[in-house]
Image (cartoon, rainbow, N blue to C red; front, top):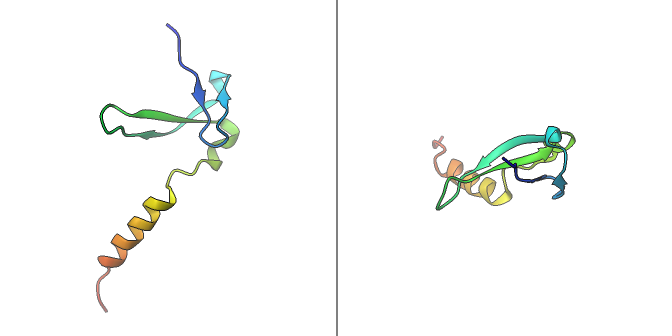
Amino acid sequence: MTTGLHVCRACDEVITDPADAELVAHDLGNSGPGWDIYAHRDHVGDVELIGPDLLRIMLRIWAAHRPAM
């Protein structure tokens, strides 16, 4: 059985050593099971899991549901 190559989410390079691949997240797919997101061990802290669009949307939701003073 062969394993697929993983691409580092932080630097967009192929992770050639399987021992260097760290699973950092799982993206859900619209029409399937989704896929795992990997990064080099040294780049795990550099992976940005929340994009700016999601953060902007969540801030608007939180502001709308904030109780009035």
